[in-house]
Length: 287
Image 1 (cartoon, rainbow, N blue to C red):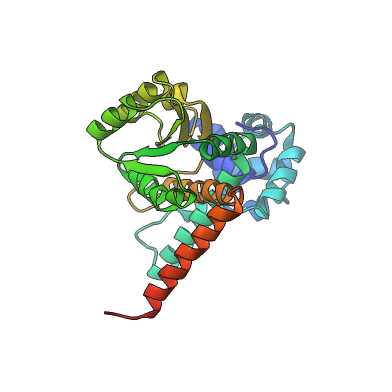
Image 2 (cartoon, rainbow, N blue to C red):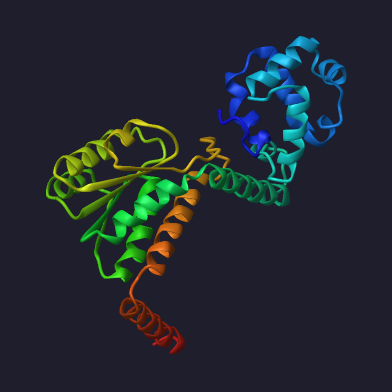
Protein backbone atom coordinates (compact mmCIF):
# COMPACT_ATOMS: atom_id res chain seq x y z
CA UNK A 1 0.00 0.00 0.00
CA UNK A 2 1.28 3.46 -0.87
CA UNK A 3 1.58 5.40 2.38
CA UNK A 4 0.33 8.94 1.98
CA UNK A 5 -1.86 8.17 -1.04
CA UNK A 6 -4.30 11.05 -1.65
CA UNK A 7 -7.36 8.80 -1.59
CA UNK A 8 -7.65 6.86 1.65
CA UNK A 9 -11.15 5.72 0.75
CA UNK A 10 -9.75 3.80 -2.18
CA UNK A 11 -6.93 2.40 -0.05
CA UNK A 12 -9.50 1.07 2.42
CA UNK A 13 -11.66 -0.35 -0.36
CA UNK A 14 -8.73 -2.21 -1.89
CA UNK A 15 -7.64 -3.54 1.51
CA UNK A 16 -11.00 -5.04 2.53
CA UNK A 17 -10.18 -8.63 1.59
CA UNK A 18 -6.77 -8.44 3.30
CA UNK A 19 -7.95 -7.04 6.64
CA UNK A 20 -8.58 -9.06 9.78
CA UNK A 21 -12.24 -9.66 10.56
CA UNK A 22 -12.32 -7.05 13.34
CA UNK A 23 -10.43 -4.50 11.23
CA UNK A 24 -12.86 -5.05 8.39
CA UNK A 25 -15.73 -4.09 10.69
CA UNK A 26 -14.05 -0.73 11.19
CA UNK A 27 -13.49 -0.34 7.45
CA UNK A 28 -17.14 -1.03 6.68
CA UNK A 29 -18.35 1.53 9.21
CA UNK A 30 -16.07 4.17 7.68
CA UNK A 31 -17.03 3.34 4.10
CA UNK A 32 -20.74 3.36 4.96
CA UNK A 33 -20.55 7.05 5.91
CA UNK A 34 -17.03 8.52 5.54
CA UNK A 35 -18.19 12.10 6.18
CA UNK A 36 -19.60 11.08 9.56
CA UNK A 37 -16.48 9.05 10.36
CA UNK A 38 -14.23 12.11 10.06
CA UNK A 39 -15.96 13.66 13.08
CA UNK A 40 -15.93 10.60 15.33
CA UNK A 41 -13.74 10.16 18.39
CA UNK A 42 -11.77 6.93 18.73
CA UNK A 43 -14.17 5.53 21.35
CA UNK A 44 -17.21 6.45 19.24
CA UNK A 45 -15.86 4.67 16.16
CA UNK A 46 -14.98 1.63 18.27
CA UNK A 47 -18.56 1.43 19.60
CA UNK A 48 -20.09 1.80 16.15
CA UNK A 49 -17.89 -0.97 14.76
CA UNK A 50 -18.34 -3.18 17.80
CA UNK A 51 -14.61 -3.48 18.42
CA UNK A 52 -12.07 -2.37 21.02
CA UNK A 53 -10.11 0.88 20.90
CA UNK A 54 -6.80 -0.97 20.31
CA UNK A 55 -8.44 -2.54 17.25
CA UNK A 56 -9.06 0.95 15.85
CA UNK A 57 -5.39 1.81 16.34
CA UNK A 58 -4.37 -1.46 14.67
CA UNK A 59 -6.74 -0.75 11.77
CA UNK A 60 -5.15 2.67 11.24
CA UNK A 61 -1.73 1.08 11.00
CA UNK A 62 -3.04 -1.60 8.63
CA UNK A 63 -4.18 1.04 6.13
CA UNK A 64 -0.91 2.97 6.30
CA UNK A 65 -1.83 5.73 8.76
CA UNK A 66 0.47 6.92 11.53
CA UNK A 67 -2.32 7.42 14.03
CA UNK A 68 -6.08 7.72 14.45
CA UNK A 69 -5.84 11.47 13.91
CA UNK A 70 -3.76 10.95 10.77
CA UNK A 71 -6.44 8.57 9.49
CA UNK A 72 -9.17 11.17 10.02
CA UNK A 73 -7.17 13.89 8.27
CA UNK A 74 -6.44 11.70 5.25
CA UNK A 75 -10.04 10.54 5.19
CA UNK A 76 -11.26 14.14 5.09
CA UNK A 77 -8.87 14.92 2.23
CA UNK A 78 -9.98 11.88 0.26
CA UNK A 79 -13.62 12.99 0.39
CA UNK A 80 -12.64 15.79 -1.97
CA UNK A 81 -10.74 13.37 -4.19
CA UNK A 82 -13.50 11.08 -5.35
CA UNK A 83 -16.30 8.73 -4.42
CA UNK A 84 -15.18 5.34 -3.25
CA UNK A 85 -15.96 2.41 -5.51
CA UNK A 86 -17.37 0.71 -2.42
CA UNK A 87 -20.38 2.99 -2.73
CA UNK A 88 -20.78 2.13 -6.40
CA UNK A 89 -21.62 -1.54 -5.87
CA UNK A 90 -24.79 -2.20 -7.85
CA UNK A 91 -27.61 -4.20 -6.29
CA UNK A 92 -30.84 -5.72 -7.59
CA UNK A 93 -32.75 -3.05 -5.68
CA UNK A 94 -31.22 -0.17 -7.68
CA UNK A 95 -33.41 1.59 -10.22
CA UNK A 96 -32.03 2.68 -13.60
CA UNK A 97 -31.23 6.21 -12.43
CA UNK A 98 -29.20 4.83 -9.53
CA UNK A 99 -27.37 2.37 -11.79
CA UNK A 100 -26.41 5.23 -14.15
CA UNK A 101 -25.19 7.35 -11.23
CA UNK A 102 -23.18 4.54 -9.66
CA UNK A 103 -21.46 3.54 -12.88
CA UNK A 104 -20.41 7.14 -13.55
CA UNK A 105 -19.23 7.52 -9.94
CA UNK A 106 -17.27 4.28 -10.14
CA UNK A 107 -15.54 5.19 -13.39
CA UNK A 108 -14.71 8.76 -12.38
CA UNK A 109 -13.38 7.68 -9.02
CA UNK A 110 -11.30 4.87 -10.48
CA UNK A 111 -9.85 7.13 -13.17
CA UNK A 112 -8.82 9.58 -10.45
CA UNK A 113 -7.18 6.67 -8.66
CA UNK A 114 -5.34 5.57 -11.81
CA UNK A 115 -4.13 9.13 -12.41
CA UNK A 116 -2.75 9.39 -8.87
CA UNK A 117 -0.73 6.20 -9.39
CA UNK A 118 0.60 6.91 -12.88
CA UNK A 119 4.38 7.15 -13.18
CA UNK A 120 5.19 10.22 -15.31
CA UNK A 121 8.83 9.14 -15.69
CA UNK A 122 7.67 5.83 -17.21
CA UNK A 123 5.24 7.68 -19.48
CA UNK A 124 8.08 9.87 -20.76
CA UNK A 125 10.29 6.81 -21.36
CA UNK A 126 7.49 5.18 -23.38
CA UNK A 127 7.02 8.35 -25.45
CA UNK A 128 10.74 8.48 -26.22
CA UNK A 129 10.68 4.88 -27.47
CA UNK A 130 7.61 5.52 -29.61
CA UNK A 131 9.09 8.70 -31.12
CA UNK A 132 12.18 6.79 -32.28
CA UNK A 133 10.31 3.69 -33.50
CA UNK A 134 10.43 2.57 -37.11
CA UNK A 135 7.34 0.43 -36.45
CA UNK A 136 4.77 0.07 -33.65
CA UNK A 137 2.97 -3.14 -32.73
CA UNK A 138 0.08 -3.25 -30.24
CA UNK A 139 -0.75 -6.68 -28.77
CA UNK A 140 -3.83 -7.43 -26.68
CA UNK A 141 -6.26 -10.30 -26.18
CA UNK A 142 -9.91 -10.08 -25.11
CA UNK A 143 -10.84 -6.68 -23.68
CA UNK A 144 -7.26 -5.50 -24.16
CA UNK A 145 -7.60 -5.95 -27.91
CA UNK A 146 -10.01 -3.00 -27.90
CA UNK A 147 -7.18 -0.81 -26.62
CA UNK A 148 -4.77 -2.22 -29.22
CA UNK A 149 -7.11 -1.49 -32.13
CA UNK A 150 -7.85 1.97 -30.77
CA UNK A 151 -4.10 2.67 -30.81
CA UNK A 152 -3.92 1.48 -34.40
CA UNK A 153 -6.29 4.31 -35.29
CA UNK A 154 -4.06 6.95 -33.69
CA UNK A 155 -0.39 6.23 -34.20
CA UNK A 156 -0.24 5.83 -38.02
CA UNK A 157 -0.90 9.59 -38.12
CA UNK A 158 2.73 10.06 -37.14
CA UNK A 159 4.10 8.43 -40.28
CA UNK A 160 5.11 5.14 -38.68
CA UNK A 161 4.07 1.61 -39.60
CA UNK A 162 1.54 0.46 -37.04
CA UNK A 163 -0.21 -2.88 -36.42
CA UNK A 164 -2.68 -4.20 -33.86
CA UNK A 165 -2.75 -7.94 -33.21
CA UNK A 166 -5.36 -9.89 -31.25
CA UNK A 167 -4.58 -13.39 -32.53
CA UNK A 168 -2.11 -15.58 -30.64
CA UNK A 169 -0.51 -17.11 -33.74
CA UNK A 170 -0.08 -13.70 -35.34
CA UNK A 171 1.49 -12.40 -32.13
CA UNK A 172 4.13 -15.13 -32.20
CA UNK A 173 4.79 -14.63 -35.92
CA UNK A 174 5.08 -10.83 -35.61
CA UNK A 175 7.19 -10.78 -32.45
CA UNK A 176 9.65 -13.37 -33.77
CA UNK A 177 10.24 -11.15 -36.82
CA UNK A 178 10.89 -7.97 -34.86
CA UNK A 179 14.27 -6.39 -34.30
CA UNK A 180 16.02 -3.16 -33.29
CA UNK A 181 13.89 -0.12 -34.07
CA UNK A 182 10.62 -1.99 -33.63
CA UNK A 183 8.51 -1.24 -30.56
CA UNK A 184 5.98 -3.66 -29.07
CA UNK A 185 3.29 -2.30 -26.74
CA UNK A 186 1.79 -5.24 -24.84
CA UNK A 187 -1.57 -4.58 -23.17
CA UNK A 188 -2.86 -6.87 -20.42
CA UNK A 189 -4.72 -5.68 -17.32
CA UNK A 190 -3.76 -8.77 -15.31
CA UNK A 191 -0.32 -9.09 -16.88
CA UNK A 192 -0.66 -12.86 -16.53
CA UNK A 193 -1.87 -13.75 -20.03
CA UNK A 194 0.72 -16.34 -21.01
CA UNK A 195 0.51 -15.79 -24.76
CA UNK A 196 1.01 -12.03 -24.53
CA UNK A 197 3.96 -12.47 -22.16
CA UNK A 198 5.53 -15.07 -24.48
CA UNK A 199 5.20 -12.80 -27.51
CA UNK A 200 6.67 -9.89 -25.57
CA UNK A 201 9.64 -12.00 -24.50
CA UNK A 202 10.26 -13.07 -28.09
CA UNK A 203 10.20 -9.47 -29.30
CA UNK A 204 12.62 -8.38 -26.60
CA UNK A 205 14.96 -11.30 -27.29
CA UNK A 206 15.12 -10.22 -30.95
CA UNK A 207 16.11 -6.66 -30.07
CA UNK A 208 12.75 -4.88 -30.14
CA UNK A 209 11.90 -2.34 -27.44
CA UNK A 210 8.97 -3.44 -25.29
CA UNK A 211 6.39 -1.45 -23.34
CA UNK A 212 3.88 -3.09 -21.00
CA UNK A 213 0.53 -1.56 -20.07
CA UNK A 214 -0.87 -3.51 -17.14
CA UNK A 215 -2.89 -3.02 -13.96
CA UNK A 216 -0.23 -4.11 -11.47
CA UNK A 217 3.23 -5.56 -11.03
CA UNK A 218 2.96 -8.79 -13.00
CA UNK A 219 4.89 -11.49 -14.92
CA UNK A 220 4.46 -9.59 -18.21
CA UNK A 221 6.68 -6.78 -16.95
CA UNK A 222 9.70 -9.12 -16.74
CA UNK A 223 9.95 -8.72 -20.50
CA UNK A 224 9.19 -5.00 -20.74
CA UNK A 225 11.77 -2.24 -21.04
CA UNK A 226 9.16 0.25 -19.83
CA UNK A 227 6.32 -0.58 -17.45
CA UNK A 228 3.17 1.55 -17.48
CA UNK A 229 1.14 0.59 -14.43
CA UNK A 230 -2.48 1.63 -14.91
CA UNK A 231 -3.88 0.66 -11.55
CA UNK A 232 -7.66 0.71 -11.22
CA UNK A 233 -10.30 -0.56 -8.85
CA UNK A 234 -11.27 -3.30 -11.26
CA UNK A 235 -14.15 -5.48 -10.19
CA UNK A 236 -14.88 -8.64 -12.15
CA UNK A 237 -18.54 -8.73 -11.06
CA UNK A 238 -20.73 -8.75 -14.19
CA UNK A 239 -22.68 -5.75 -12.93
CA UNK A 240 -19.70 -3.42 -12.85
CA UNK A 241 -18.04 -1.53 -15.73
CA UNK A 242 -14.69 -2.62 -17.17
CA UNK A 243 -12.76 0.35 -15.89
CA UNK A 244 -9.35 -1.16 -16.68
CA UNK A 245 -10.09 -0.89 -20.40
CA UNK A 246 -11.30 2.70 -20.02
CA UNK A 247 -8.18 3.67 -18.08
CA UNK A 248 -5.89 2.03 -20.63
CA UNK A 249 -7.65 3.94 -23.41
CA UNK A 250 -7.00 7.17 -21.53
CA UNK A 251 -3.31 6.29 -21.18
CA UNK A 252 -3.19 5.55 -24.91
CA UNK A 253 -4.67 9.01 -25.51
CA UNK A 254 -1.95 10.51 -23.32
CA UNK A 255 0.77 8.73 -25.28
CA UNK A 256 -0.63 9.64 -28.70
CA UNK A 257 -1.23 13.27 -27.72
CA UNK A 258 2.28 13.64 -26.30
CA UNK A 259 3.77 12.05 -29.43
CA UNK A 260 1.68 14.38 -31.63
CA UNK A 261 3.03 17.42 -29.80
CA UNK A 262 6.59 16.34 -30.66
CA UNK A 263 5.97 15.94 -34.37
CA UNK A 264 7.75 18.27 -36.85
CA UNK A 265 5.67 20.94 -38.64
CA UNK A 266 5.48 18.92 -41.87
CA UNK A 267 3.86 15.97 -40.09
CA UNK A 268 1.43 18.24 -38.26
CA UNK A 269 0.42 19.76 -41.58
CA UNK A 270 -0.22 16.30 -42.99
CA UNK A 271 -2.48 15.45 -40.05
CA UNK A 272 -4.34 18.74 -40.46
CA UNK A 273 -4.85 17.98 -44.14
CA UNK A 274 -6.15 14.52 -43.36
CA UNK A 275 -8.66 15.94 -40.89
CA UNK A 276 -9.84 18.39 -43.52
CA UNK A 277 -10.46 15.52 -45.95
CA UNK A 278 -12.45 13.69 -43.29
CA UNK A 279 -14.48 16.81 -42.58
CA UNK A 280 -15.30 17.13 -46.30
CA UNK A 281 -16.52 13.54 -46.42
CA UNK A 282 -18.67 13.98 -43.33
CA UNK A 283 -20.23 17.19 -44.63
CA UNK A 284 -21.42 15.70 -47.92
CA UNK A 285 -24.11 13.64 -46.28
CA UNK A 286 -25.19 10.17 -47.36
CA UNK A 287 -24.14 9.26 -50.89
